[in-house]
Amino acid sequence: MNQDLPVIVAGGGIGGLAAALALVRQGFKVQVLEQAPEIGEIGAGIQLGPNAFHAFDALGVGEKARGRAVYTDCMVMHDAIDESLVGRIETGEAFRKRFGNPYAVIHRVDVHLSLLEGAQETGRVEFHTNTRLVKVEQDEAARTVTAIDQNGKRWTGQALIGADGVRSVVRAQYVNDPPRVTGHVVYRAVVDKSEFPQDLQWNAASLWAGPKCHLVHYPLRGGEQYNIVVTFHSRKAEEWGVTEGSKEEVESYFQGISPKARQLIELPKTWKRWATADKEPIGTWVFGRATILGDAAHPTTQYMAQGACMAMEDAVTLGEALRLNGNDWDKALALYQRSRVARTARIVLSGREMGRIYHAAGVERLVRNSLWMGRSQERFYDAMEWLYGWNVENCLARD
Image 1 (cartoon, rainbow, N blue to C red):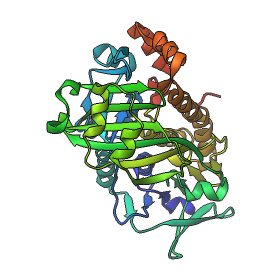
Image 2 (cartoon, helix red, strand yellow):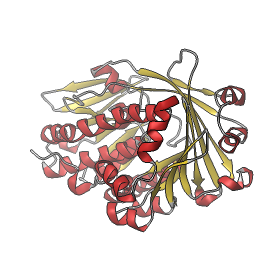
Image 3 (cartoon, helix red, strand yellow):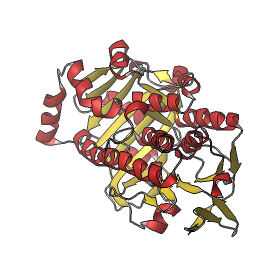
Image 4 (tube, rainbow, N blue to C red):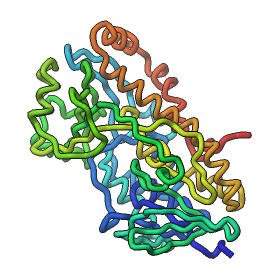
């Protein structure tokens, strides 16, 4: 009788913890298998749309996340060549009224911590570190799924959620599709407020769009730190991965950028360098009693600022699909897949297009600027409705 077994979650990142919380809320016990020595998170800042806060609330950790976020007054985009304001989206009262929740920026570690605290407080989530999934086996007769780790230990559950990231072992076993390396390189860093230029200390998610490059900055942790992200089209063939970066490389890609924007790249003492990739969207996420979630299901570029948000949406949707189907895994997983494939594919494909728009050059740059300059707030909000209008009430596909 497999209903007494836990649900196995591969991966203790944002997606895995969100999945654990969603499952516990449906009455399941959960075992989280994490390959790292401890449950934690690395990285820098991320942006949270109203859909992320809807997900936090549905997972029971809304107040934890709200207490760690910085609430911006607006999102702004400037032309990095002539410093002109291309677009400004107010994220104050009118924005919150329209979408039911705020827009904020936050350190990735603080998102993870909010979910981790919530999972620990349930008393129904076990964490197993130094545990790397290498293979999945399923017993159709018993309706069980077994995760086998690097030491040969077997972890058997009534279902398995592959929240094991962009290099997902679960996806590799059942799909085995290659990454699509973009050639775009991202450098990320966090600097203290005391070292950040006063003329750029805006309470905003700010983007400077340049030819084949862009720069982003926004405050973190009560405004005591600032997140800096710079992106450029690499001149060389790239391999998907993270390495140490160099200021000299960054500087070489931003020669034509205005001094006001370019001063950002002088600030960090150390950089982390991401050679980015995504994968082609797939229509099948369910493999017997195993499924995938978050970056394992829909790895994407950073241009829509929705990676963590989509992982949490996935988790909430999975939980709702189970609730609606009385914890019948076969029906719930089918509904979960049907509810998420098109939306997350739209994020992946929109990310590719936004990367092209942000990095427009020549006449295309002028077209981009003319499309957004002077646009009303309502028109911006209407364009965002498909993204930020998601919530727990509308997350499931309607037959």
